Length: 136
Ligand code: FES
Image (cartoon, rainbow, N blue to C red):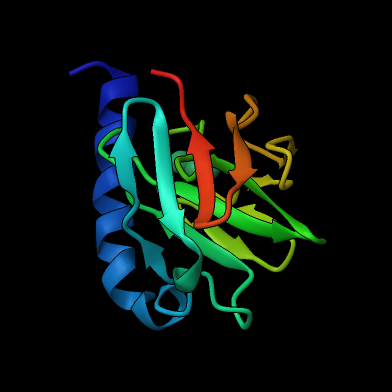
């Protein structure tokens, strides 16, 4: 096992262990289960409570994070670009519980060790709710 694989393996194990300890903090971020049609994830509007500003969006390729931004929404990857831990919305940032990387809602890295920005995805508002376009 090379160094990078070892670090990824331990980071994922740490994330899983930390998840059980930090569950109360994570539990406040609801998870949406969208309808998937090709590259489009559809979320019904009744799942987006006015009292929430952040959601996880479940999907096979790793969770997304949906954030309310002013009158609109932004969607970005919920997986840290350092060693792939699941990010947590925290105020106006996304923070990584594994090594502390912090990202802005536009995906930009504010604090490392991550150096790559998070992928962001187009969000369209529809009469029924939202559509997030996630190209494969
Ligand atoms: S996995 Fe290392 S900072 Fe996120």
